[in-house]
Image 1 (cartoon, one colour):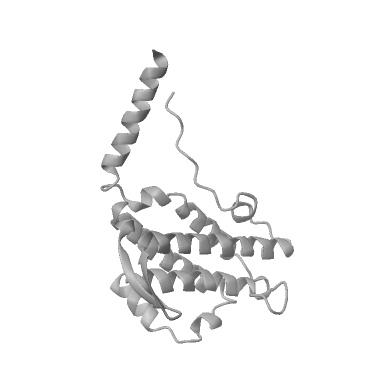
Image 2 (cartoon, rainbow, N blue to C red; image 1 turned 120 degrees about the vertical axis):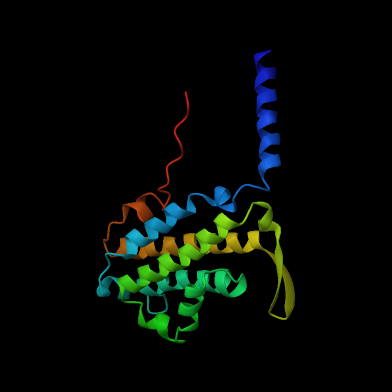
Amino acid sequence: MESQVRRRTHTARILTMKMTASTRSAMAVFRGWDGYQKSLVHAVAPLSRELLAWRGEAHLRSVGEIASHISQGRIWWFHRVLGQGSPDFAGQVAALRPDEFNAIVENAAELVRWLEATWRVIEEALEAWTVDDLDKTLVQPYGGKTYAIPRQWIVWRIMAHDMHHGGELAFALGMQGVRIPELGDMGGHITEPPLAQL
């Protein structure tokens, strides 16, 4: 009898989740990414020019270039492709010189400024969109083909991009003996789950 009650309760929860999916913020699905963003900022903010300039091999990106590349990916997909971001952010992006990101790769404050500015664009979009909005598609030509790309694909693309290059940052800083417990030891997963109601 008790197992039947548990099964009915579980089924009721699933039905409730399905019914409210269209009104839930997309951020509810991607919560935790904000913690990863914080761990990226905390890793980059204290770095010296020398640490930012370090690269494992001549053909690899430097630490600062990796941090810059994370912001550039966000700008490309969320702002240029999806059209997200405030008028102020659009003005900042429009004012960028082609070589500007190369000029800031050894400036921790500027790297952090762009990580935070691009994160606000992502956060505002995910807070504004519902879960159902993630299915909306846009037509994007690339490499001689034309794709119908769902927002969900783009969000996952950039979240994976953040994690991949954040891992590169952790590895590159670890090779220099820099301790970054949030991004390194915890893998950027610093957002704690809620406590159980017992």
